[in-house]
Length: 143
Image (cartoon, rainbow, N blue to C red):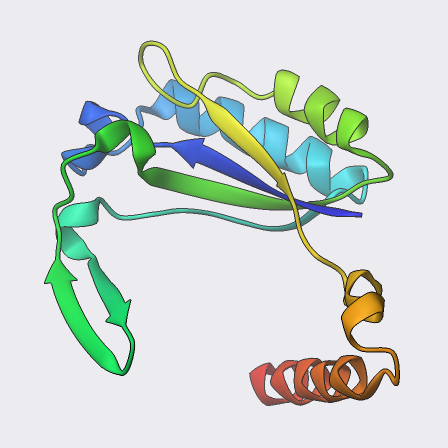
């Protein structure tokens, strides 16, 4: 099972302030544990929303909204992608994480859909096969 681990932003992360050496060291050790355990598939910090944009969809119309975005507590400051056996295992790994912010913080855990989850709406497997082909093509182009 894969889980997206979402680190929620705070006022400090939204200013673009980088973490101090102590937090960088602690996160480095944590990431090393994740890698050694075969849990970590990906993980990155994100620039503040002031450097981002959103695209709003309304039928065929597209509207671009430049950051920053006002609801800080709803923004994401970074993420990990874990490969684990269960939601409970993902929770246990997140509980071991150093606090990613200076004060209070929150990390959200969301399961990633797998191709087999779509079997009820793709009984022939055609869409899943095409998705797998696209994944392989994408991987080969990154190498």
